[in-house]
Length: 214
Image (tube, rainbow, N blue to C red; front, side, top):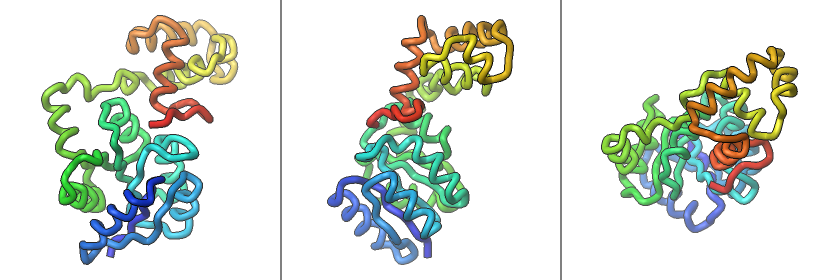
């Protein structure tokens, strides 16, 4: 029997998913959560095989929650169930540790197939997302994913308003090196200013305490 925690702030949606999932003889919903705090508590207590996670929660974006839940129970797999089908959301969810992304518009049997695929160790995208990536493969590559680890660190610090001198001090590197990384990442992201960096990070829920409602 596979145990599943449902995280969605709409009771009707949770009930629908629960009924669908529990029609399967080997799937069991062990907890239903409406917020990020509830999800952390349930996962800590239950250690489920899988979390089915909505991205829009009353206490913040579900994107940072993915990493938090993985740190709480690293063996628990996470599938995002969302109305949002934009490639930046998909790429960021997978980068943060989700094993699957299913849009809420797909057929019920596809949702169940996705849950099973993830629990068997696969990475699953719903058919509408796979089709879009096949038709427009360039959109599957969020430009932020092209950044190196150091460039990503510099990007996030610049995005929250740190001056290059402060970035250098926080990362323990030279200020000249910061400018080199800044020039490289600005080019990769086609950004013209730190304001552009802030917008990109904010849209993806990457800013501490400023996660976008996605």
